[in-house]
Image (tube, rainbow, N blue to C red; front, side, top):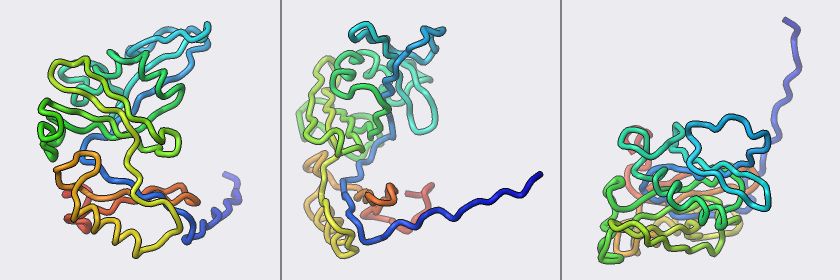
Amino acid sequence: MAIEFQAWPKTPRLFRDIVITEKVDGTNSAVIIQEWPDRAEASPERLALINRDGVLYEVAAQSRKRLITPGKTTDNFGFAKFVQENAEKLFDLFGPGRHFGEWWGSGIQGRYDTKKLTGKGLRGFALFNVEKHDGLHEWFHDDPNYDVLVEAMPVLYRGPFSEQVIRDTLKELKDNGSLVAPFNKAEGIVVFHTQSRQVYKYTIDNDDASKGNN
């Protein structure tokens, strides 16, 4: 085998802008909307087919580890069912792409008392890409058991990197509670470093614990 040159990647600068958002305690999910140009055989994971001006788009959903479909053993806390039932509206809100966020609320992880917020069960899909989805705040009321709120994660800070700002932001969230789920204890923050395009989390409790224990 020939020896190949492999360059060391460029090192991003630390003191560049960051975006701090709330870390929500739910389950990582994504809505997939992709063009279906070749009219190939439909994927079994397809949840809907959308026609826009003669262009066909497949809609699907995923959890952190797999594609998901509605069903007791194939879904992820009902996220695929929600996507399937609202595919047209989600297409109009998001457009093509893979839209990642946190699916949280009634029956998911159990951190938040959602009845404090609405008097009814509540679930939310909080999107990670706050630049693309800035200002999004859309309610879905079709399910008899709970309402669903689709929105961008709340931005807590946007500006130059500062360890003190990160610590102060976390303390403020700890003192005042969750913005996504008011009247509830917050889990922590997520820091997005704009130059490295890397995401870091900082939890209020047990931040030094391993992933399996946090």
